[in-house]
Length: 155
Image (cartoon, rainbow, N blue to C red; front, side, top):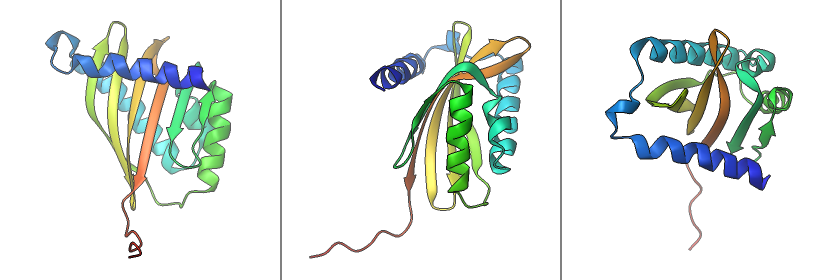
């Protein structure tokens, strides 16, 4: 488990120092390809189609869901199983998602996204790699928070 968290932290550490570096800008064609994968992800996610979502990850992908009840998954099959569990506990309400930042890191792309579903809001960092003629998710770190009405504090 610690190695998974360390791997995700390493991936995130690659993404953030490059904010101001123009040489890390993603070319428009690649950006469109990544956004297309993001659209496929969103459509499959909103249909609660765990197999279709998992197919967008590499075979050796790592996914960390950093929220209460979330789990870390290594490998496409484990990700599919985790998504099935996640979908079983979710309302059928759709999740809105948008990529807010994207950076090239050698032959990889780091994409930072925001998402929301009702009172749940969160962010993801995904590292994409080329896999044949498409992009696949190699690493994902997702975090979420509930922004609903909180109970009053006792005095």
